[in-house]
Image 1 (cartoon, rainbow, N blue to C red):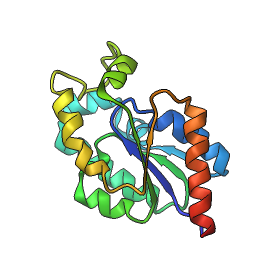
Image 2 (cartoon, rainbow, N blue to C red):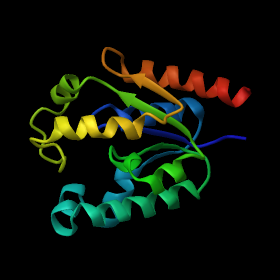
Image 3 (cartoon, helix red, strand yellow):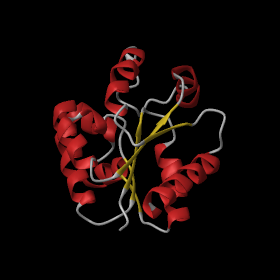
Length: 165
């Protein structure tokens, strides 16, 4: 039985890029949870400004539940989606993959991007706080120094072994 592969991790670890490549490799649909939220509620930065983080997180949880009810896929979650205990319970039915990279690498990837509402002066503290939420993953893949395709291939190999067991 195929399971959804949920990809989590901090902002700029490559969840969406690797997820799309992984979906092609596994012949599964790809769903980017942030894209789902943008399609239904507008740009994420605007959602934060208009509604606040608490409302955004509620919408994120509802979208997560809807996506997971739709059948197996490769799902790139938002960086904070794994921090909610309710979301962690939903994700427990998935193969949970976390992408990671040192904060300095992530900072270089983001550069001066302003569309990330939580990329601010507190980013180092937020990165540190979220590590505990990511620790319950089935596997962790380091993305610095690897191409997105190499990371997707490594994840695909792992998932294929899990599903064959």
